[in-house]
Each structure stands twice: as structure tokens, then as C-alpha cells.
Amino acid sequence: MLSDIVTAVRTLTVIPVPGRDTETFSRSLYWFPLVGLLLGLIQAALGYFGSRFAWNELSALLVILGGIVLTRGMHADGLADLADGFWGGRTREAALKIMKDPNVGSFGAIALSGIMLLKWVILLKLVGSGAFEFIAAGVLLARWTQVLLASSLPYAREEGGTAQAFVSGAGVLHIIVTSGLTLFFLLTLLHADLYALVLVVSVALSAAVFTGVLSYRKIGGVTGDVLGAGSEVTEVFVWTAAALYSVVNV
View 1 (cartoon, one colour):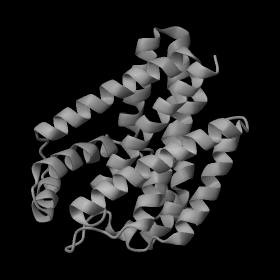
View 2 (spheres, helix red, strand yellow):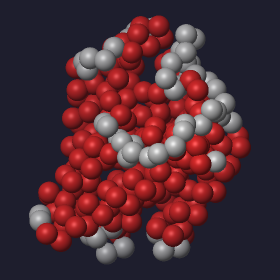
View 3 (cartoon, helix red, strand yellow):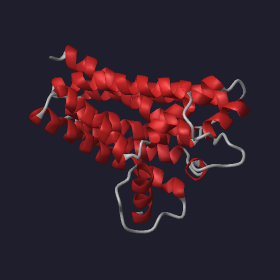
View 4 (cartoon, rainbow, N blue to C red):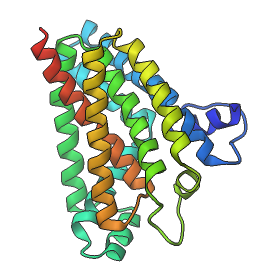
């Protein structure tokens, strides 16, 4: 079990941890919500302390930069690659080839700059209303979405790839276990606010379905880039819904 956690932390963050990686990489998926909670709490803390000692605009930026630094920008890179491949490739093969190219194209640059700006605007509202628990919840649910996608769709590349070891062994049990963990963490984060819980979980599921359907239609499954993009989309969906919820409940 310890090696599974080590792999989950090493896969999703830059946080150095001692120990060996797991022999079965899909087993690390069980711990993605735990790592998501850790990342979420750190980013929420950055937002909180930033709002106490600086402008809300800077606080929102700290949340975004913290997420990029802690994850090596891996998920943002996945979103850029997905945008380039899905909108630049006319066929499945062309899309997969473009997604493998390390260079960022026009579609990727537009998607990346657009989603970062959107995040900043939404986080500005969350920070201003003191809804830091929703910042953490969005990051947590983004990692849960990765498990949902990896467990419900096949790996798209026939020749294999970096994320194949995670996807090939994932299944229903991963969804059940991580869903239980995610709900438990959310109940604590949101102070047992059932309305907020139902809202953020429903929105996260919508983000997962949106990303999954789009990916399956375009390339017949998922890749590491799709998992990263799904994470980014989930954060935006959840934070947007949370910002609206905060406005209604002021």
C-alpha cells in the first residue's frame, strides 16, 4: 500500500517522497483523491494567506501558480496537447500524432491562456467571498475525475504510452473506492453541507462525461493528455459552480 501512495504522489506532484514505486501502477489510482486533497489544501492555503497579506488579485494568482508548480504544469500541458490534437487533427491518427508533439500550437496556446484567465476570474470571486474550501474541493475532484476517465475508457494508443500502465489495470473497483474516499473528504471540507456536496460532485461528473465523450469520439479512448485535460476542465467547472453558489448564499 505504501508504494502505491508513493507512486500517486510522484505521478501527480513534484513533492519528493522516499520509497519504491508500486509494481502495478493502476493501484496508485486508489490514492489519487488523497493526493488531490493534499494539493487542494496547499492551494487553498496559498489563497488564504495571500488574501490576508496582499490583494485578492494576487491571491487568486498564487492559487493558480501554486497548482502549476506543484504539478510541474503536467495537466495544463495535457490540456494544450488535447486542444492542438482534437482541433488540429482531422483523423484519429492525426490527432494522436499531434498530441504527442511536445511543441504547443495555436489551439493549445488559446486553450491554455483562456482557461488560466478564466480560472483567475473565478478564483478572484472565491477568494473574495472566503470560499477557500471550494478551492480545495475543486482540486480534489479534478483528481477523482482522472480516476473516472482512466477506469471507464480504454487507452487510445495502440503502441502504448506513459499512462497506459495506469489505464490498463483500472476498473469498477477503482471508481467505487475513490468515490468513497472523495465523498468522505468532501464532507469534511464542506462542513457536511449536502447542497454544496451534491452541486460540486454533479458538476465534476459533468466535466468527466464531457471530457470522456469528446475523447472517445475523437480518438477512441484516453491518453495521459486527456486525463490532464479532464483535471483542468473539472477545476474550472467546480470553481465556477462554487462561485455561483457562494453568490446565492451571501
